[in-house]
Length: 201
Length: 281
Image 1 (tube, one colour):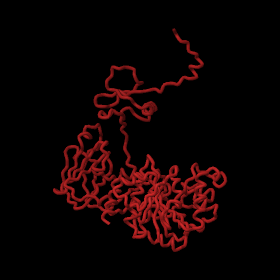
Image 2 (cartoon, helix red, strand yellow):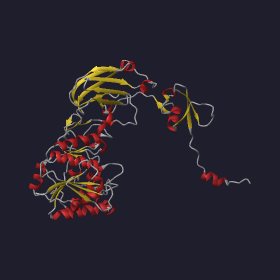
Image 3 (cartoon, helix red, strand yellow):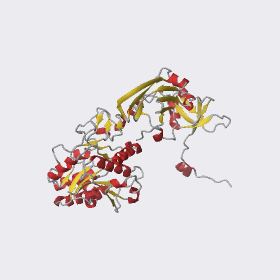
């Protein structure tokens, strides 16, 4: 039997549903449209998108072509011009593998072999497959300093992003004590691994 | 002379205060000379202390049985101290050199209680800004810092001073309305309570020293005499703790006791560096 709802009660208790949206993207991850959720099940490449991002797109403060989907995590990423503001961005100490948060992905790995006095810089394949734009002649500067003290500089190595993208760089480096590496944090996660390390903390 | 440092730890889910107290105790053992390096810990979780690598850095571990929140246990410092002469410290502090002459000076001056009335930036400048102390300025409270509280057990004013401080902490509204009507604080903390206690007892002039001997660096961001506002000190300057247990903040070598305030700056790496220092001593 049909239940008659009292309109006044209904309107008093009515809570409007929070609108939900989804982003449609192409096979490379570029977002091509945003629409209310659940319009059609036919599209495969879709992902939920936060209301505040939708509002920014609607208001014109964020352009659709700045949005893409990280195909690994399935999350919406927004490209922005990055400014290095914090001291940790300008002078970032590259953490040792032992102290690196393993839940994070590594972008650049540095391996120092003390016995052979060789240092290897490599960009991880995961970073190489990301849709990123950079000026190829951007220089990554690595400062080799006293342990956790960038005021005492031992050596400096410059590598362009293009060089690192094309192949790993292996260089000669002799430092006979514990050291730290500092860099401008142009990429998110760097990590240092030491081999044949007999000088521990 | 039976002198020692006293540290309170009230277990908290957000911050591992025992780790901070442990680092502080190690830094005391590493830097202070014999007779000035004793440390007592007052904690509500004694069991956790035994899980530390070197629990022996605490000469005494005392159980705190009372139900007190946040930093309120510290107001009981005079009752829990096992020493004749005590300096009660905040757990988020660290020592870098020998400060035993400070203690000699405090005891030699026949002070029964001492609280610093000034603090310094990491560059060694006197902090002039009252950004976090509007209540003090507006209500003419003596500008006392409880992060370094010295007291003598055999003292006539000690008991009165701390009893009144505790009473203020436990009955804040009775005192806020009368003594702190302007820029009224939401919470009356140990600093406010002990400063108000000193003001009511009219002892604020006799529990401080004007000789600028005792210098504590206070790292709250808005009082670093910077010409810009800051949410975090370490967004602007680096924290460089080397293998010798020496610290540079930005370009400045730290030599005074540091109240670093930002707890997550103390990493396991720093603790392990200091553990190595104490093991090699």
